[in-house]
Length: 298
Image (tube, rainbow, N blue to C red):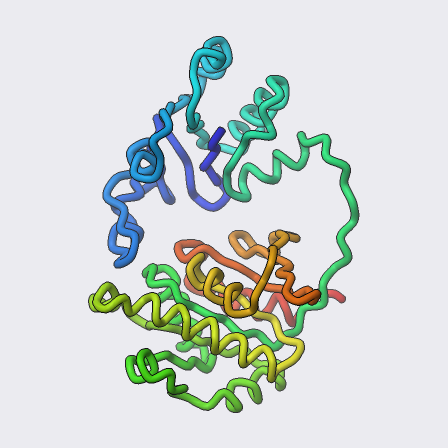
């Protein structure tokens, strides 16, 4: 059961098609992503490239028919949703049919899943988050790159990885300077790009950048101690978690829409991270997070 809609974040699904803030997915920045360009917003066509399982689009108002012949169909069921009321209804229907254990979807659906779930709840101790903020960006989505440029325009210091370090492993800037900024509770950005680079698919440059970002983040964390790390993009998070030897990750809370606080576990240590999808958030999200960390109660 796949419920991909996230209305609060401007993601809705209608007749199996995904729209971002009212715009078909293939007409947004996701179309120009150099690594994973999207040429359609029809979700069954997108998923068909990743699985051989049968795919079914379940429109609003078809829930009764969906349940009546469920025993005769096997595969992935993709549900329409254009509002939170739709998500709530889907969750209730799936709960009554004992299907909640087979659901997947973003944070928009997870909030309703938590309300419907009979899983025993426990209180999670609030994690201490330092106002010293390291933003690590390996995403080439134009939304993330615009967020980086906006932060720079607002006076936030940024360090980039250039071609000179990709093959040699050389560090193109001073880690000590980054660490010094973080220890003064400032915000620092480490990014692989400021603009989309058309060369990114040549010689697997993006893989080399990912490895370098992971290694640099590990070194900065070792020298900085208690800092808050925010990761832009799934590939970025994967590279950092690999470099740190993380064994598992636990989502904790959504701090700001689209920004999720997670606990990553490595060698018996719990490391707090904030993660963001490359295509999420407004231009000023870094400044917004910076302000949140400075005013957040202990």
